[in-house]
Length: 365
Image (cartoon, rainbow, N blue to C red; front, side, top):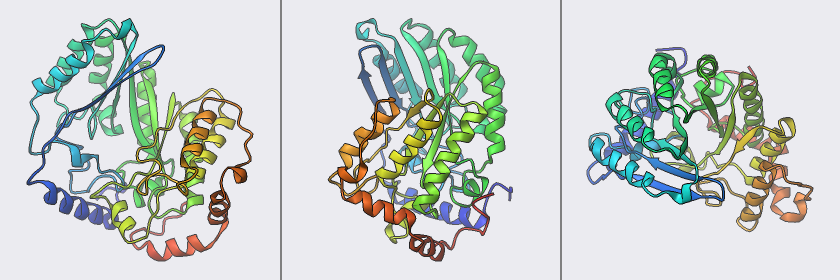
C-alpha cells in the first residue's frame, strides 16, 4: 500500500462509504444542479454535473474521510452527455445584460479524470465556451495526480479557450502530511500539490487552494493552527486564491460516523473568524473565499445559534478588508465558551482517547 495511505483509516473510510452507497443505490436519481448569481459587475454561473463520481472515493481506498459528494454522482446511473451540454447551453443563453460571465463547472471528482469526465465531453464543453464571447473565466477542480498526468491536455484546453482565463481548484486541505494521511485519507502528500502548482503556474493557469477546517481527530485549537499554517504554505507555494471550507458533516463519511458517536463536532464560527483575521493580517491582498455550506446548522460550522448570522457577516467584512474592531465578548456570551474550549486541555485528552484510527504520527512534523 502506498506510503500516502494509512491502511487502518482507509479500510474504515471505504467500509462506511460502501455501506452508505449500497443503502441509497436502489432509489437514487442523479440530478443536475445549477445556480446563477448576478452582481453589479459580473454574472457567476455554477453547474454541478453528476458524472460517474470521484475515482478516489470509489476506489478501494475509500476516498477522503470528510467528503460525501460522491453520494450525488451518477455512478451506475449515468446522465447522457447531451443532457449536460444542453443544460450548460441553456445557462449561457441569456445575455445577462452583457455582463462578463464566470462559469464554474464542478463534478464530485476531478475535471481532468478521464473516467469521471470523458475527454469527448470536455471537448464539447470547450466548443460551447468558444461560442460565447461573454465568458471571462472557467473554474474547475482536480486532484494533483490528474494535473501531473494530464498536463499536456490541460495546456491544450487552456490554449483552446483563450482568452478565457482557466482556474483550477485543488483540495490541498492541510499542509501537514500527517493530517493528510492519518486524518483525511487524501491519498497524496504536499509534494504532489507543489508540483501541480509549479506546472499550472508555468502555463499561466490560476490556482485556487481549498483548506479544510477541522479534520477529524484534531482539537479546535489544532484545527485553527493548521488552517493558518496551510494558508501560509499555500501562499508561499504560489496559490492565487484561498478557499476556506469549514466542515459540513456529510452522510456516508468517517466524519459522520464520528459525529454520530459524539466524537466530532464541526468548528465554531469564532474559529473561522480567528483564522480569517490571521490570514488577512498576514496577506492583505490575498483573495480569500469562505462560503461555508450548512453554516449555522448543527452539521455545519456554528456558534450558539443566537450570534451565528452576526459572526458570519463579520467574517465577510474581514475578508473584504473592512474595519473590524469589535469586542467579541460583547457580541455574544458564547465567545467565552469558545475561548475556554480552545485553551482547555480537556478536549485534547478526550479526543486522543477516542481517536483509535490515527497512527501516532506527530502532528507538528
